Amino acid sequence: MTTQTNSKPFKRLLLTGAAGGLGRVLRERLKPFTEVLRLSDLSDLGPAREGEEIVQCDLADKSAVMAMMEGVDAVLHFGGISVEAAFEPIMLANIQGTYNLYEAVHKCNVQRVIFASSNHTVGFYRTTDLVDADMPFRADSMYGVSKCFGEVLSRYYYDRFGIETVCLRIGSSFPEPLNPRMMVTYFSYDDLVESLRCALFAPRVGHTIAFGVSNNPKKWWDDSKAGHLGYQGKDSSEKFADKFPPTAERPAKDDPTTIFQGGPFVLSGPIYK
Image (cartoon, rainbow, N blue to C red; front, side, top):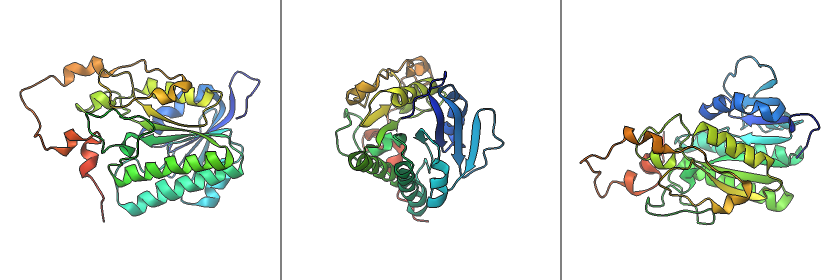
C-alpha cells in the first residue's frame, strides 16, 4: 500500500460499481482519502469531476479490467450485480468479474482490496443465531453464492500472493430502515464510510471478514474477529423505532422470511430466465 507525503494518504483509489446505489454515495465521500478517485462502472458515470478519473469497464472483460488497474494503490470493489438474478449474469459480473479483478490486482501489484461482500453469504442462519466470521457459509441466493465465491477467492489470493483483503459483509445500507428486518441489519452511510476508512488505513488486515452494520439494539452478527480494524458504529436504528411499532399482527410461525436472516432473499432464487 502506497503512502504519500502530501495531505492525502493515497495517490489513486479505484472504486468499482461507482454508478450503483452505494457507489453514488461513496463517489464524494472517498475523495478526502485520495488525490485521484478512479471511478468504474459499466453504466454511464457522466463527466469526471475534480479529482476524478472515469473508466467505463465491463468486469467480465479481462483486458479492460487489467487496463483499469494501472497505477492504482488500493481497490474498493463494489461492482457487479447486487440483487438476486439469473445465474448467467451473476456468473459474468460477480464471479468472472471478481476473478478478473483479483488477477489484475495481482499483476499490477496492488496490495489491498476492500471487497463489498454481503450478509446474504450467511442468510440461511436463523434470526435466533449469532453468526461470526468463522462460521460456515449459508448463502440464501445465487447472489449470496457469488459473494461466497468472492470471499474464498480473496482468501486464495492472500494465501498465495499476500494480497490483503477486507471482506465487508454489508447489511442494509440506506438512509433509514425500510422494514422491521432492516432494524437489525441497518448500516448508515456514515458508518459505511467509517468502516471503509478503517479497512483502508489499518496497518495490517491480512484476510479479514467484517460485518457491515451500525450499532443497532438487536444483533445477528458478532464482529469481534474484525476488532483489529478499529471500526465502531456510531449510528443506530433505534432512532427509527417509531416507524415499526409493535402491533397485534404476527407473521406465521413457518414464514421463512422471518425465520432466516436473509429475509425475502431466501425465497427469491434461483431464477431461471
